[in-house]
Image (cartoon, rainbow, N blue to C red; front, side):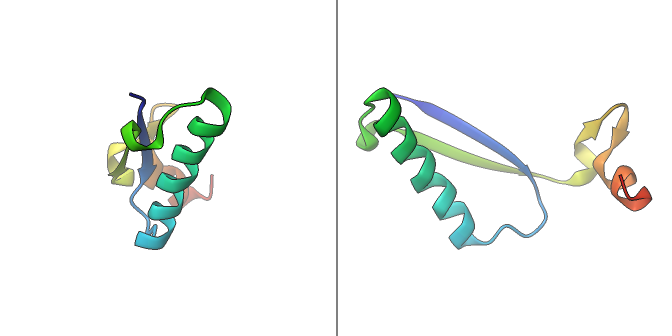
Length: 67
């Protein structure tokens, strides 16, 4: 039973885009590893950019600077 956790910043991914991610990851696990789609779990966590850091800085700050 595969469990996949996708973490993305909360910046407006639509319901359709998230559904496409879930379907695509499920399909990939089936095609590559032969996993049963009925038992594949995919969770998408959306994280505020203030709560995501790279190189000691929040993503919010980096994006404000244009990085």
